[in-house]
Image (tube, rainbow, N blue to C red; front, side, top):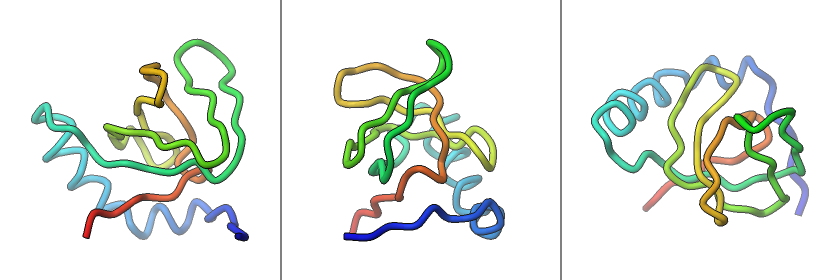
Amino acid sequence: MHYTVRPISHWLKIRKHFDFVRDVNCLAGGSGFNMRALYEYTGPDDNHLSLTEGEIITAVCYVDPYFGRGQNCDGTTGLFPLNYCQVILAI
């Protein structure tokens, strides 16, 4: 399966979705939404999550157009780049 990194302009276009999720879920103490890592990412410090391709990040909160805060399967929480991940929408 082939994935491409979405440019920042894509995230800015769908910012309303993230603002809604942040306001309703994150600030109200909800569970946020889930994302799947498309690429490996090594966080520069302890505030960032390191991602493995295919890993599911849960309870994601929108922080800004570039970063989200979430929890990986090990229970570690931190910041990660949104353009390295794909939103998993519940149907």
